[in-house]
Length: 216
Image (cartoon, rainbow, N blue to C red):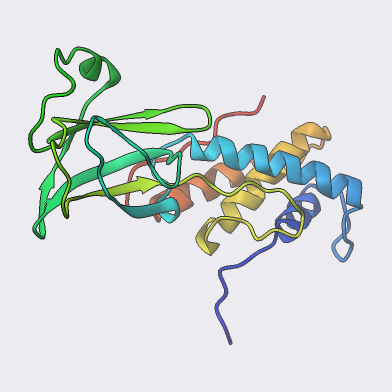
């Protein structure tokens, strides 16, 4: 027996459509219906990433600084920065997060010194990380960043869904709940099952909370 953490978009869409009786148990959904459900699933996953606490999307970046306040991030648009450290000589110094308003109120943004604070400015398709004070020169220093990456776009029905196996039930049932609304299907208990599965997935995480807002 093996353990796999992969499920295709077609797998998820098919299970969701069977849950709301859009296809029979052993049938595969028609291509046009499957693709429509893929679009709904992509929209749902993008809504999910707007909430805090997606443990499976956490990644760690080591960024070589530049002199000046603005730092370029790769990947270009993390969802949020959870924590940031300034590393020099193998020693990490924890940095404090600022709000945009706090950064704007700094009278001299080009002050040099050891960076102690940061402001993460996330825009529609890109983002800029501002640090203060700024480094006068760079040798071997790095910024060590813990952040949440964007979830992968669902571009094809054959894509592997960007979620771990413990979230499959929540994703299938919440997609089914959306499809039931779209196709005006009355499935007793589905909304409650979807909410319970989501709560179970949340409870299994190590950080924060998430909420998939109502699509109605």
